[in-house]
Length: 397
Image (cartoon, rainbow, N blue to C red):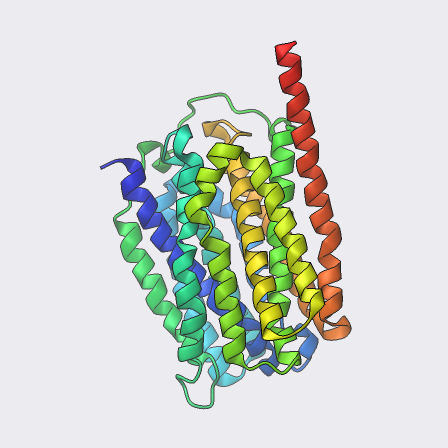
């Protein structure tokens, strides 16, 4: 059995379980925070702290993977996931806001490790299959679109009078299923012990490459814009008197739109290149803002969040694939770590500021706030297109 056919489905399943937990938190964390926090402007703090934990753990996670291997590191991370799920459940039952923040942050530590599933798949296959491997692993999120929001909805009242306590308790099952899948993972020997097969360049030298700069910028802004709008959506829908089942429906379709395109994104990248796919992602982001500003009915929220999901997929998968062109195999851990650290620094800030902006200035301000970010992403992509075109012309001349 090839490395692709064995490892990629297992990593896709683990991605599905991790994203199911993440989508459950997206649908519920702000609402739980709003219920538990005395200062309602802090309602998105739990979700923001989760992303801060992802940010702070990105580099240590990569260092640990370089030391003991990907597989052992993934298994170690599940200790944080299960602990976080249990603490979050107890925090809701005891009506303790800060305990809930702490529990969700532990889940964030696990999610930091889970973010390396896509790179693990890319590193385990040959260069011609990297974009497909990344895309297929991300496609595991399609399952998350079904499981996460529905699990939140069906387990919301699992503990009477303690909304969503049952939802966070159910996460324990998801994480144990991932442990079973990881146990069957068989990665190349190099994944367990990094070999000095090539001289490594300084990180600054790697980062000076235009392809690396644009990959990081677009990954950062694509994820940041998505997180900013997505985090504020449950609060905005609640403000406009939509019930939770409607919110769950919108988030479910949003997560589906985030990952369903992954079945074809890799093939599109191979045919057209990363930059055109990323540019299409930016345009979908602009379309999302247009529909969000057009109205606040369920249809408006639904269509805008679907467009936002596709935007994230094209920008993030494209940026991840583009980044793999910027480093040699021996350099992968430090570049991947820095990339995810930067991305989730922005995502954490976006999640925290989304609640503040939504609570104090409203839904329109949230959407207007992402327009400059989308414009920067578009200009960076166009710059790299022009740069590569000039490089090719010089070669032919």
